[in-house]
Length: 263
Image (cartoon, rainbow, N blue to C red; front, side, top):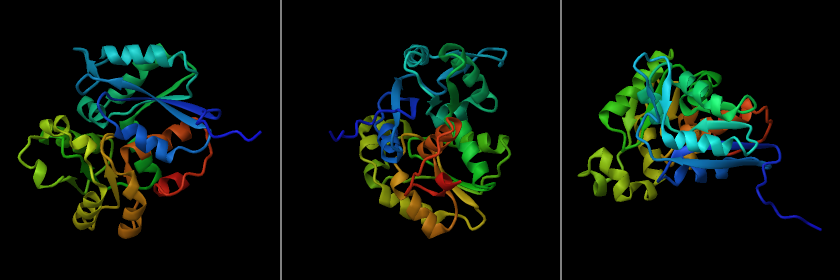
């Protein structure tokens, strides 16, 4: 009897916390996933950061959705759980990722590896030899969040060569960043204009490109950008999947989504 693929995670199962109303993270992960590896999402509705510093800035208080999702994940035999939210790492700042990992690990137990999108992108940048990334942020990042992203990478030893907030076109220009997704931009994203803007704006001194934001549709153009710019191109979801595979010690051939998977 020939069995059909049922996406069963017999090699590894990954848990991912994602923004409650976003469709992009799961779609991009499923596009890139190697055989016999599955992804399972828990949705979070809390604002960034998803865990808030206590007054002493030593420990974090987790959002209720994180606690609920962690308890459910703990019963699923997962290999790795990732907090898939660039903004939480950026706004939380230096030390937030490690504190979040510590808190989540206390619920998920010692057999589950925990990571964050911030840690994943840092690992991917370092593995790719990128020190001066050109940072691309989605149009729904306001000035404060974009600045927090630049500061985040500076605090971790990188020197961003510049940044670009993607312009989604005239239909959206009269809306404030915080109004874009609630008016439908999250489901109307187009990748070809993004490719054109990155290619036209990339500084000559950038040694790589990093596209932040797990809800920012972009993995379809990563390989094309690497060919055109001849530099490593990383994205939030791509970096997290790559890092989760590495943390789970899964050797897999992932083709078409950037050179980081060949490292």
